[in-house]
Length: 218
Length: 218
DNA sequence: ATTATCTTTTAGGTATACCAAAATTAATAA
DNA sequence: TTATTAATTTTGGTATACCTAAAAGATAAT
Ligand SMILES: [Mn+2]
Ligand SMILES: [Mn+2]
Ligand SMILES: [Mn+2]
Ligand SMILES: [Mn+2]
Image (cartoon, rainbow over all chains, first blue to last red; front, side, top):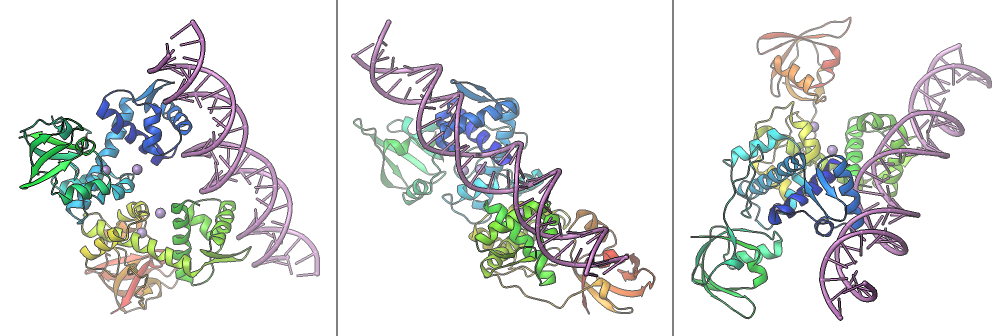
């Protein structure tokens, strides 16, 4: 199996299971990797052979410790590059993901550690995702989704779970950037639309968008 | 044909023909690409189809203008990355080639132009090779090989044509780095060994090594 | 429990990028 | 010019990474 293929599978399995903390099913992988379910079955069989995952037929897949280790190192590379592109090279948070998708496959520990050092060994990338350290350790936080926030609560925007340029540009337009202060004014019972104050301006956020915004209670 | 494959072929054809300025034969390509002659034949047929090269059976291959344009852009990326790794990220001139071999395939003009700007749009990479500008234009120089230098001549080291870590470390050991001043003390008639003074120290250079060192008459 | 639906796997197939060995073509030496 | 040698191409084959369509398995609804 090509190294890049292995890495894309493992990273995707990691990203899907770190949210749910449960096994990943083929359909999710087929979606994220944009390949057919049939191809996913084949791929997982090979990754199982390589001992990167435990793949149980018709049930689901989880990473072995070797697989998790490799996945964490890809995630680290991806997030370090995103941060470097944003902080050192002047790219917007809506541009960095696509480029990092390629850069993440360049395997040179000295390079990544050097970039990390230049950035002051950051803990979070431009989307608020935690950056594993060189040993694969991640600082875990108790952030919540904006969709779980309560009326009259005061929050700080800590991250996003959708990295699409369209969504990020939309947020930026309303000054909903990392670190922004958010006061929940009201939640519409009918459709869970959230009305909040950010930078003194009132913004209305759909329930779907609120699912993709990560905040911390202030 | 995979983009990376196309790029590696074209870059290699460019590098082989820019020295000779003549057609490239299959064997040279097989060597540089480290694949069999049979595979080279197949590859060239496809590149011909794609109109990146003119491949004449059993004779040789040269780049079309479309091929040259693409080749120049890979060479630009490669050399900009080498320079960035050396100047901004603290890598040695013996380390950068290998990493740039991967980085050169990341296709994002804004990224390369940004790196170039940070470096002050350099004309030469850490090995003294010219960097094509964003339009593919190369500043050409009248450098010569050290093997063509004359006794009692005074030269400045401008580049190397072998990028292997072993060779570069050997040069560095004798302070033969880019910009170094070289006085030719003598040339052994028997085997063309060159005795020169660099940084006040006498160094003996084999004819083979002298072929790989590029100098300019001072 | 049976059917209907949704998910996963199997079967059979394509395209890419390589290879070794044999056949052909070109270059060189006798 | 005719061997001999060297370079190139053809032939037949492998491995990877995908695919579609059909079959099998799992889940949910009646
Ligand atoms: Mn990303
Ligand atoms: Mn990737
Ligand atoms: Mn190089
Ligand atoms: Mn390359």
